[in-house]
Length: 168
Image 1 (tube, rainbow, N blue to C red):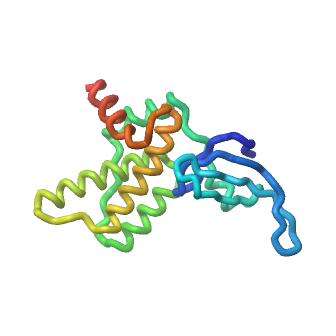
Image 2: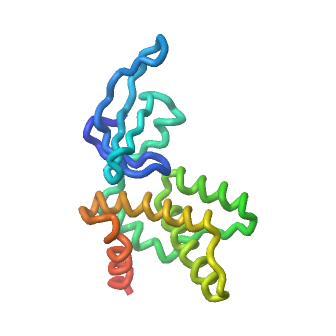
Image 3: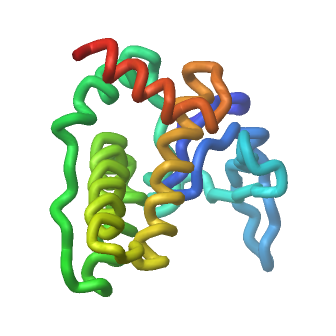
């Protein structure tokens, strides 16, 4: 059970604050809903039925500072196996974004960065769908890190880079 004021990660949608838990009448049924408001996209509001296993299971507490530090240390070894078939790759990447495994999301970002570099070396561009997955993965992970570390989302990449360089 989450509480009003708590900050959560919701699936592949991003970081939200639980604004309220309130009853909503839909048809004849009255159901309690979490009202989630995005921290970084003011117009993004989600209504999640309390106790609805499939939807409520997509809500995760945000990481702690220590968990973020541990995650950053593990990024150099994080990688997602590249799937050549575009349709299979899309399914796999969607699964990674929605599973709540931040290391897998970091691995996806790393894999897509490396793929982009390899494509550029051969004079090619990355598929548009892969670019979108990269942006979604960055948004998802960077928004959470930004919130916890009290920095702006656009500062997260350099924050991670600085931390990784300091370890070497």
